[in-house]
Length: 413
Ligand code: AMP
Image (tube, rainbow, N blue to C red; front, top):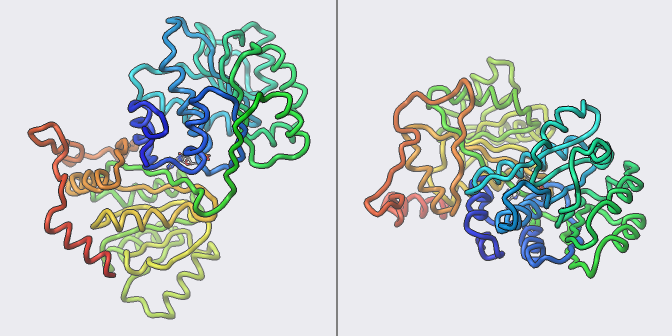
């Protein structure tokens, strides 16, 4: 089910694909069409379900379709409880917005830091503001912005907003907003105080209830990083350090690579082990137990050895070597984001497998933005040279014999 079938314009669907969102998550499936209809929405959704994009994509579409004013006018206001969430939502909006033909100006504001840079950022107006309630009131007192043109208000993690004692600030802000507007309320739980607020705030809302369950989430974010083949282990070490995931499953193509990569990580002081077909049953059991108990941070495995691993909260999967078939890609990335937690699947794209990765993307109906990490920019030629056919499309529409064979092998094993 593509994003366009939810009523999103191709530009927004492309923006979602560039973020690695292959298909809409359950909350997106339910909330996006409801929000695009323009009415109020009351949604129960957990973090990790894809709820941020569920309201950001329609907000951006509304902004894109709004040709009424050339001047930057604040149309979308997102209130949320914490600085971390504000930064995260701001980043999502900007990343999605970057793929659009016009880029929205998004300003993020939260307390605990100097107000001046936020006032400066608001100069000349903003299209969408993401803010914690207290800081937004401060900014309003400084006449840094006006809420008079806001057409959509989002309350995200509304239960936590109330838990953190923001009820009075929200009430003050509601009085400053235009009476005719769309209200969207997202929350993981609905305690009585929130029900009261929802009743006051929302007009005949569409109610969406996405329970936390394996099939409703978790959202898996897919990333593709361009790197030279020879520098993959270094890049892996860098990612382990910069993102510090608790548990990572790294996929390699052979037993030999599994031993080599895990050995190098061990030498660098990382708690890593290899898992492949040559491991005895006893070794396998021990390695898996250590990984489950987080005594190991990294498991470097081949596809066959990794089958059947079921570990809750596997935050990251890395395709050190790309899978041979698109079916293997699906199996691999399905290892992350289990049990309601969100996960990330990172593929290393090198000169000699760039075309193969494009083929995987095509089969998966995704098109990931290629990332380059400072210090690891590829030097090998052809990492990002597109393989374009005479019709302007990407080559490899039909499966080659080799691919068919691989897919058949993968299906059998
Ligand atoms: P959230 O529930 O908004 O905190 O999102 C959790 C994670 O899921 C974020 O890292 C998003 O980038 C990612 N995400 C959101 N929507 C999708 C989707 N449709 N497919 C895959 N990943 C997604």
